[in-house]
Length: 392
Picture 1 (cartoon, helix red, strand yellow):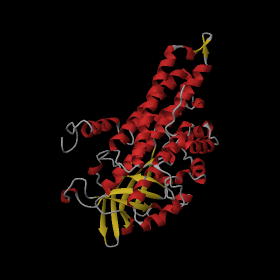
Picture 2 (cartoon, rainbow, N blue to C red; picture 1 turned 45 degrees about the vertical axis):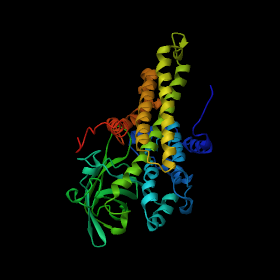
Picture 3 (spheres, rainbow, N blue to C red; picture 1 turned 135 degrees about the vertical axis):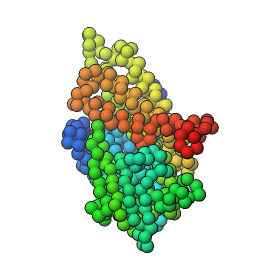
Picture 4 (cartoon, one colour; picture 1 turned 90 degrees about the vertical axis):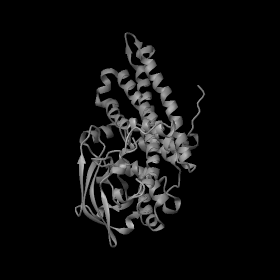
């Protein structure tokens, strides 16, 4: 078979990431899963080798790589059977800081993030009552002299317990006072160490997979005015750019998961003998895996197309969302086929399939549901009427 790799230029990156992952086999992840523990050693290893500083400019101690390279890093982590969810936010939040942060903020935070002495892993956007309807969020930041006073709640803020810094989206102007419904939201870069227990409370949420997610409460939390990123009231636009990179990078993780599932299943199908013949000889086993492989290849193409558009300075909203949907579908299809191929052994912890199966299911829902992506494509590409929200 002729092999064309859209990421061939990043082969050295793949090799380097794979070498790190080799020190963290399935037994490491199974132990963490059983204890619901954070993979500190794994994250520390990625930091030590510079992979989490990939998108930070060289002048601040990073590698200055683009989103395509970052996507390869995260894809390879998942392809090797590991899980980047413990640290991927540092990459997809970086665009907000790099594109909209001022020189002082970059100098203050980026060197520490690059060398690992500071961790930017928390992204405070989603709220219990608004969900994906970001413009309806209720967390407020009221200006009070040289500070903002923050009140409200965030949910599904993953890694907050393991992060020093947080990107926070809050309303600074009431909805009934703005000219445009997208105005009035602002973005802040907060050092949570200064506020924990002093207006900031973090509570973990136990989920079906080991994801270290939390809910956060703000009670008159006073933050310096210079925590504001960019212009007050324009935060929704800044966050949208970050969401595009988030969708692309998580799509890349899904591609890595799909490759892991298919490789795992194919190896098992070649080796498992039933009725005197390898089960992989049966079309009933072959076809689901072959179909999953075909869908994986198609999804991979749009993922790296979206990443290339982002790097070229475009606003690939449709492509980023399409990539996330197709990649998540490909990984879930591959997961289903992998479990089915393994039969009962697919449910045994020692095979790692059930753990990865649970992890893969998340991306049918997060960071945005498939249904909303379809709504976005229908409206933005097909010109169909908006099917939800105020314009309905």
